Length: 457
Ligand code: UD1
Ligand code: CA
Image (tube, rainbow, N blue to C red; front, side):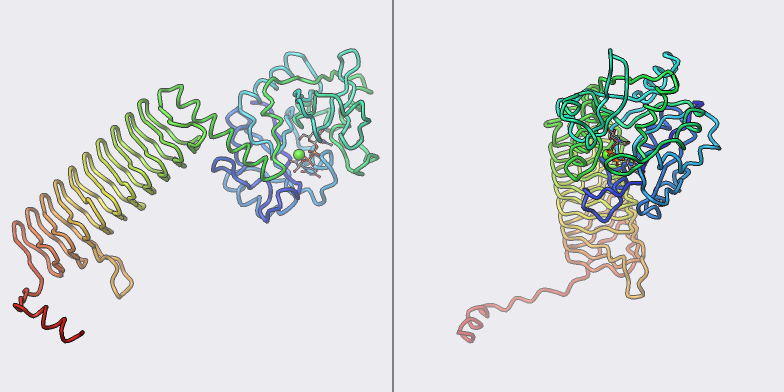
């Protein structure tokens, strides 16, 4: 789109009471500023300039990887001064100005504002909303319905404060209007700041076409100035996502306590229990069940898979019809093949776990390749980390039976159809079909228990 976005993000955010710059606070997993930038891009805007100031080094760490131009405002002298720091002389398209701390704006909001601006052939538009409690927002003052000026709450009379129509801080404006009038704004107000809102007065005085575009979506005015407003915004984004998914046939037991990030895909017929986190680039197929207190980050989960309560999965692929948990931990690089079963208190890291294989209880498998139809007994450990501080691999063939409480000292290979007897420490490779036993023979001393007890009484 032949539009430039100027995003104001130079302010300090004192009321956040946080060492993190305000615009880096995440809303549903994504820093506010990258959210606003991404929304602009979704609306088709490619030229984006972000005004940074307070803790600009930190804010730049997020902007740089996004390929966004950061413009430094040396001192936070007000919103008009902020706009001036983007080097207006280099602007070559009309502009939408937004706040970096209004994370709920959507790409369709942006498109609507721009198309209204174009349709009404305006020189300058400000987006307004009506709020029952207008608080510290600038008030939209109209005379005979026509926009007259914006008065900051701090500078407003008691009567003006009663006005419910407020300035969202979003403006659409012609490039030449910005270039000409921003330098003319003065700081004679309660705050001694250069107010961007004064652009309205200047434009009206100079007979330009100015209007306030009243938006029905009050979310565009949802600014984040405190931790409470941040939590409110986060809640809204999660609820919005849950509602979209419900419209596509996903079942939520309680959409108010499901935390599905916007980047996540969930197939129809899947069920999300309360207190579930689905994060990042996670994709769930159809008919997946995710029970309470699961945390699933950057995972692919196939159809008809059941993730039971309290499981923690990162960068893992779980294929169709498998079951995981309760209380399983699957760490990065793990692939669970179809119809496999991973039970309670099982941890895996960098494991390929074959079709229909089972690890039912209390097991650590790391750096391992495990075939099909394998049974991993309770308490099995792959000892992958050696005293030389290197990681080694365990390979287990198809249909192997690993008895309970076995350790496999890597690097080691157990070929297909072998049986590892319970309590074995496997230190050497096991050939196909072998029975491997490595435990000290049992000694029974008849009647000794009673003797022993007497001695110790
Ligand atoms: C501003 C508007 C007010 C509107 C409100 C909507 C002015 C004078 N007032 O007030 O009418 O109702 O937004 O939220 O514009 N910023 C800078 N540099 C500065 C000052 C601010 O980059 O020197 C940035 C802030 O980081 C923030 C945005 O500009 O993202 C708005 O600034 P803020 O101080 O929050 O303005 P408000 O007082 O809320
Ligand atoms: Ca604000």
